Length: 339
Image: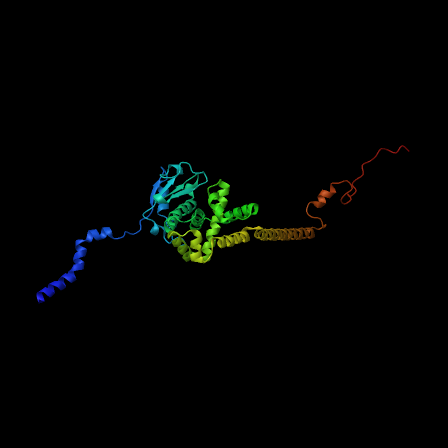
């Protein structure tokens, strides 16, 4: 009995170790592997650039409402760095020239176009790569249930594409056309270049408003509801307690307040105030220069014995009847007096 009990205890003590020893290779193969990086592919001459972009930590940094993008993807994504997007596997045969990159969630693939001198501008290519990677991550986080405007607006926000130049572009477009309806953005994103670019900017403002309403946690909850099968209106109701119509009304008001006539005029007044201040500074410096110049001329005038500046007297004596009277010289004899 004692021997049997000792044997059982020995088996219990050795069991886990024995199991690990026997199943060591199998356990290592079945354990979840750490997230792998991006797999680079490139057109001839762009291999080094592709490797740099694939290894750039800024590209794979955490994204709002998603976290590290590589953690939500089904596997390491493929990155193609090319000069012609039509040569990327699975891409459309002919992308417009203004399209900088594409994302194909079904293939877990992103592609970036290198045009002209962009090989020497890693920052622009880095933003484009992150923009397209955000498309893959969002498609995975929402199960493909995000409307197109949400996809494009989120990718811009995640990539940090917004700048003052884009803001002024949107402001001018808003002044010409007025507000937009959220439902109109999806078809506009597929329209001509100018229409599509404005729709991209408006999509960003809509996603920026969503982020302002609930931050990263709110976006994460919204994405989860979309992944569960809710449409955008249902997801908004459950996460933010708003209908889509209420959200659109608030979004349009925020866009109108930020990019409408009142905002434009207020910024225009600030511009003219700045111009006026600049002119005042320039005028003050000019007056100061003129005052110093006059003081210098007065000192030079005071230093001259005749009260003339240097060279002035000599110049005046050359004129007939000007200058001091000449001293009388010896008189030349005239003709003899006939008397």
